[in-house]
Length: 295
Image (cartoon, rainbow, N blue to C red; front, top):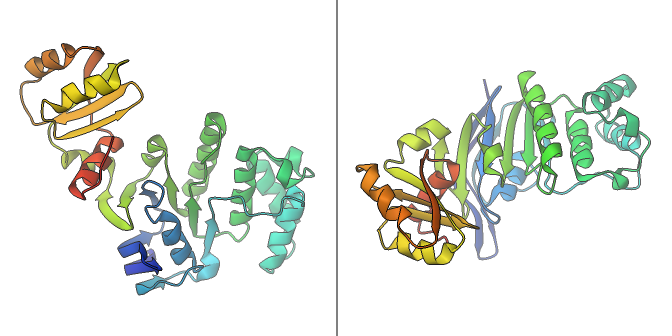
């Protein structure tokens, strides 16, 4: 069953087109990722889908009513001077929900916050704040959960715990649309939309993205990265991405052995290996096609 449909949605702030020609369908039980750098238009998209921002153009159809959608924004939005349980009681009151004590207790137990029910929300760690925000979003038993970068700034252990919770929520039939700057998290999605400068560049899953990305991907390690990167660029790769001591380069299909030897002979290169294309490679390729640039 389709829960939400967006057709040619657009939103402009002054001269800036935050979102352009967005088409999106969300169905029951889906887990969908909206992937892109800061400024890609992800938050504006979430706000339009949640009914907090009026689209400048296009059509948005919700087949579940606004009460069927819960939205967790990127920044912690609950009251820091209320305790954990007071925040949930207050949110329940705003929605007109009654006799919620037992449900609040179950939610706190499910996210391991029961022992912190009387702690001020402002004194919680980043991971605990996100768990509390998730509890608040689940109070209304939504059918669609919108999560805008829910684990940004959260430590790796808390990130993993939070995703275990999200998988549990999804297994109960709740559809989830999330955004994330972390490529490992993006791969949890059954379907991804790669977004840049307000436009969706690609839509699909990782296997389908890989099928659209022919060639050989090499991963190089070099302590003299910038020097090595220039030498790799001279070999005319299709795509080139570098960060820290890692260089990833994609070349046309060919016998890999001679090219591996060429790359290994570059001064400063300590390791070369043939790698499977990952989401960063796909995104880099999409950006190149859209005229984006990379270091």
